[in-house]
Image 1: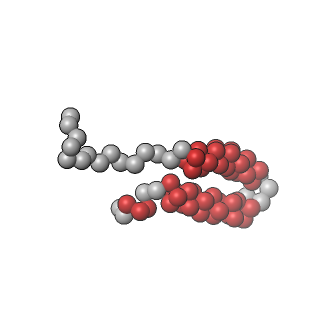
Image 2: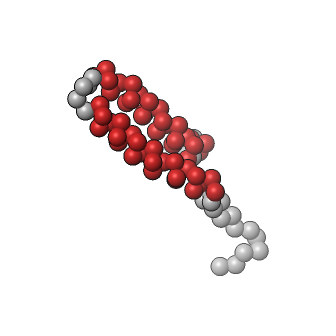
Image 3: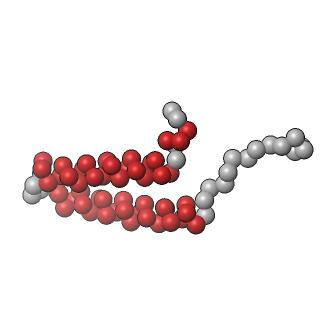
Length: 73
């Protein structure tokens, strides 16, 4: 797998694409039944995703440790 696809941005875009498909297809396959449940689950996902995105922007994960020639164990 290409390393540029293993990012938080790529993960967010992929999750957004899957949710977009689910939210478009929900009324088509279940016009009355559990459509409200799907929207509630999406709202819960969005409530969790938004603070995580803000936290990763404010305090990004550390860069990989690169050993230099002067480092000793």
